[in-house]
Image (cartoon, rainbow, N blue to C red; front, side):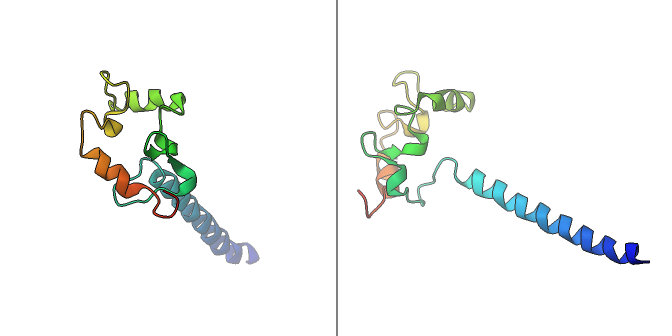
Length: 104
């Protein structure tokens, strides 16, 4: 009979651990490309190129393949289309709004 009382506890534990794992995946997904309403932290800001460091292909060429795979690539300027201010001048305001207000 003791075995039957342990089963609900074990099932509850598995559910709680599973749910906490899902939250981690959402956090990881949310850390992808920042949106215009997000502000990049000072540590994640590439001052030289004016984009978050975590998506700066000029500083981290390993990111290029990922952007190309998504179809987000400007061949003319050799940048992700989502970062190409030459083709999309409105992006300059987007990235300025994302820049950390404390670090600049």
